[in-house]
Length: 426
Image (cartoon, rainbow, N blue to C red; front, side):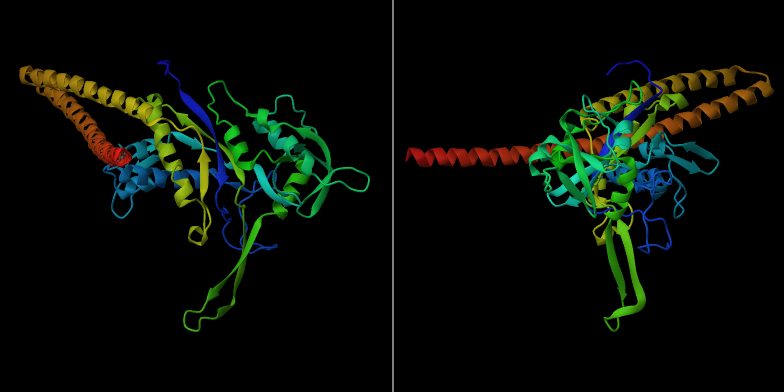
């Protein structure tokens, strides 16, 4: 990578729901369901708030580092005092997501947007298709040679769907999207589509990974129709509380709720600020790597509510920051810590000599204060270095164990092939 300083890096991510996703508004609402999900007030379309993504990412990043052997306390997972444990303020989780510790605080360096719908799965008479709108494509997607212009009573469709579309008595193609019937307009080629860059150094995810998942079964409708179709095709469920004594349903305990369906595709972006902006030695790749460690657990632990009822699992689709690249940057960072410690040691030795030589008591007191300040700074750096070195040692042991395991498997495979050759020779 280039050594050119960059103050921040923006990166777009795509996500696909592996299970229905419920991020509730809290409390009950008057409407077709009791518990509604969060919607964008401007478009009335469901979304996953950035606060939900950030909170889950922080906890999962903490879990990931913890599982890899880093010595983190519970306060680091929250960014504030928890059960008498303060956040350390030095670990990658505190650096990335921010913390409050006594009178010391620092804002996070990762800024999360809301996850908005890019493609929405809808059941039709030819199977599931993934729907989007002209407005969404205009905002997020470069459509190449495809002209995205669609009227309220029609839709655009992928070329791969052309032979499947039903025809009416007049030979015109049409398709139902849930309860609404629209006429086919022109075909499109999603295979050539790309995610737009907002700025020059914007890092984006290849759209082909998502299109391969949905089989390029893409249709486009107008923005005026899209929100009606989406809100009419959300997954709705009914639950009831059970009396543990009688085993029967509790009276008046029936409630309904809605969720974004499995297969919904979202787009979100995260802006990573460079720690150097705040005179910190860590590289921006450590911030990115920390968030992406958390993202990788979204597909297993999920986000939002009702996770124990089969909700919330989403898969973030991206070309992740490579482990080798992450460790290279970590190596550079630890090298900087060593240099800082050497410089501080030199300064402390020098100031100690000045204290011994100084005759003026007032100046001596000032020098002692300066020495104490430098020693505190040195202690903080040593604690930070110790945290990372312990982490690296445990990662190294895990890698060595993985290599030994691979070698054992390789030996077994060699024995199988060897015994097979001996049997053939006999």
